[in-house]
Image (cartoon, rainbow, N blue to C red; front, side, top):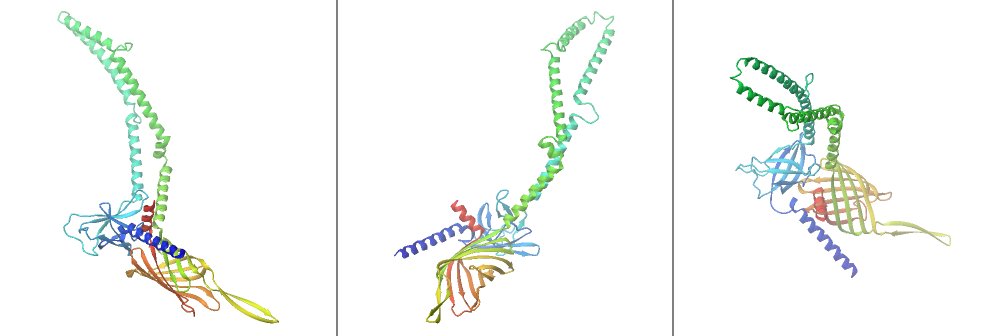
Length: 456
């Protein structure tokens, strides 16, 4: 009875995970009718199958496949059928934030003529971090020119400062005024009566002017002008000192404008960040979980993780467990009254764990791998039938001197979305053969991000 309850609980858990996985990945490849289109881009780094495609910022499809065509990348993608994609629509590769994930955005054109299935959409290359570095360098150069222009305006090389020139001109103006006054005095000789009133008025004006130009009088205009000129001179000196410090490379701005090494270091740092982000974006992962039954070992569960640092290279890590492990033969010699009898005892362990750790390389539709297969050395070949989403595999491992290697044939097929079915034939060339039938789930990077986003 307890075993029955545990089995019901395990089945309920698997059903819950399947329903949740389908709900999370429904926006990528789940429900609705889709129309297939194609486009060609020069750089497809950071985008992979199932990468979302958005229209007006909302998920409307996903990438079906990416193929190398000459020196460009041919991208085949699917868009919901209810979205009318016109002939003058544009496609652009965009990213979320500075180091965010990439996605494809489609801008629907205003044409009334619609695209047909497998038609091409024009793509526009988005700006990269190299343009950002170039624009930053140009801005720094413009700032440097502005600072030099300010310095030349306040203190031109080889010339007197403008404020000092103003004071000199004012002094000359006062001298000219005195000369004009003397000339007027000579002109008025003999005309005292006619110009008495003019002299009186001029005297009053002169007294008032003397009052205003008295530097010792705090209310005079000269005192105000003197204070303004003093403040202007101090401001000029401060600006000249600041420009001189910047020119000498003092302070952060000065170092950025004068020292070329800092600009080079900024460029190198941004370049290193770009390379690091590029390598991280290029890594792909696939998580697979299968559970089924074997004709020999009973219930069997396989969990595996494939890591793709590059499209042509991968690492395969996994663990397998079964209710009944492989047979182990032990020979026991018994001696009775001088007669020796040999007896062979066959045993096996229950709930055994077997580990997989392999390295592989992908060439076209074939995967060649080698390493540990179920805790023993072995080799494997996988063939991908892309059109049917089916994988055929052949593995040889667990070599025994008297029985040879365990040759295992297998086939995996996509049943729907992230649900897969699997069947294998073990010990194909041995007398005791066994078969396994299993079902499971397979998640790629986009599926895992959806799961993590749901839980976190």
